Amino acid sequence: MTREAPTSREIEVLAVARIIKPHGVKGAVVVELLSDFPERFRPGNELLMKVDDRDFEKLSIESSFFHKGRAVLKLSGVDDREGAERVRKKFLFILEKEANLLGKSEYWIHDLYGMRVISHTGEEIGEVTDVFSGGAQDLLNVAGKGGEQFQIPFVKAFINEVDLESNRITVTLISGMID
Image (tube, rainbow, N blue to C red; front, side, top):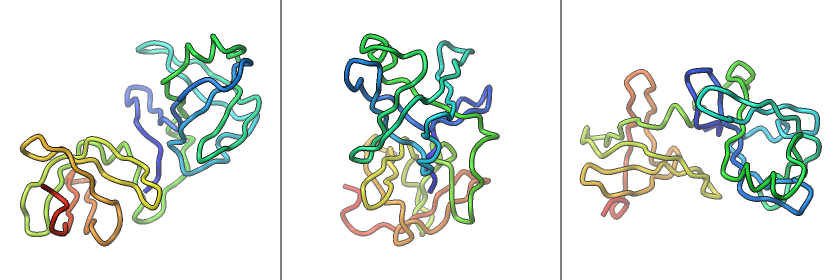
């Protein structure tokens, strides 16, 4: 699976990072990566940040480094801690046409949101509401028919098929995965 989500379909962008918090006093921010392509965060590259319902601001990466699975970025126009606080929790985007091509059996996370989850026997299990990076593998967060939430590891042992055209993920679960 390839992490580039969520999207804003109106202007065809993909989120590649989410700003978590300020780092220091000179405007740097810690970001959670939503991309499997860390080279996207090199100095000189440009990202978009949504400023309102329609408009995006283009930001250049002035400097970057990686620490504990996250990136620390200094973005143009964010010059102090107060500015970094203002962008907390915002997503950073790229244009969809700039996204890397996917290989066979790779999916954009935004394509998985809202997909129906069906057991290998045809039983309706629920719907994908989120995707988490879980260290060893990604996890699908599923809202069950009764409102319960549970996770399914996105690995071949549990995921039989992802059918984007039918909006369906077929799974094989083991006892205890769903209460």
